[in-house]
Image 1: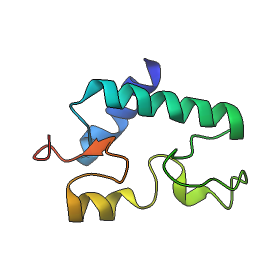
Image 2: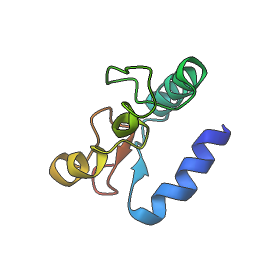
Image 3: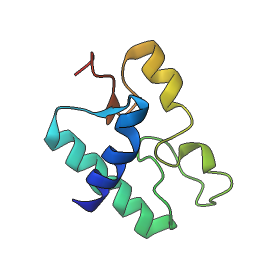
Image 4: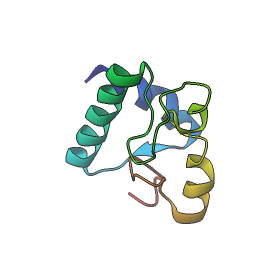
Length: 87
């Protein structure tokens, strides 16, 4: 999947890795693509989107909450991004 490779190449150098559960990752990426079709941007499926890009800026994947979640829990809320140690 193109989106997987694009995000992997952009996020791994920053220390963010995809969850090793590939089935989960594919499902989450499919949800991001579905939201891109719906709204025109890849808003996180686990948060309620307003349908307005400016209002949803904080939940466009990778969302604004990812860094704090990963720092505290080792994973973002939806578990698509995790630390190397978490995996």
